[in-house]
Length: 174
Image (cartoon, rainbow, N blue to C red; front, side, top):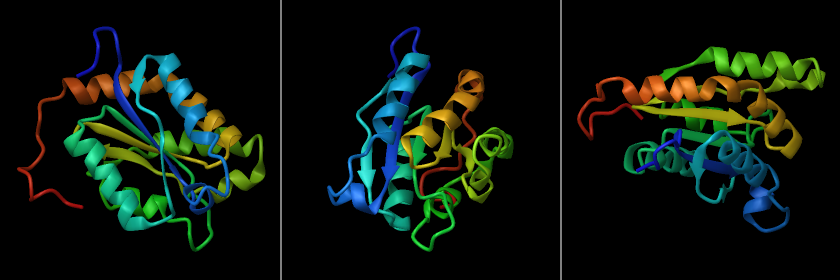
């Protein structure tokens, strides 16, 4: 349960084969967690998983369904390489997409680096949890999060105030 005055709980996942093997230090996850804490979310330490679609989907489902996180953010796995499976893993668990969030991040990023148009990041909702994909670099993740941070409190408040309309356990898509 969130503390009074908190925007609720948030969970952060970094998706990286190299970081999950200890070959690369994850800086994106801790930077994203720090920004979210600064915005008023309660955030546990980030988790790192390899680019494995099933494991990513399972982690997202657990955070939304079991932990009832208000916000779940991933960093990494959103590009065009065959190992980049975060968008597919995310879409597999979503009830619906919120394309304006991903579109706003891409639009802002393209002005900084044209390769941002290759991002396949998605955003959407599972139950009453907002799920958001960010790029895997520290700079890309924080810049993208800063674009949408001003609307996250409003989005989370709408989801948390909405009556529960999720189908009974076991009947949920994904």
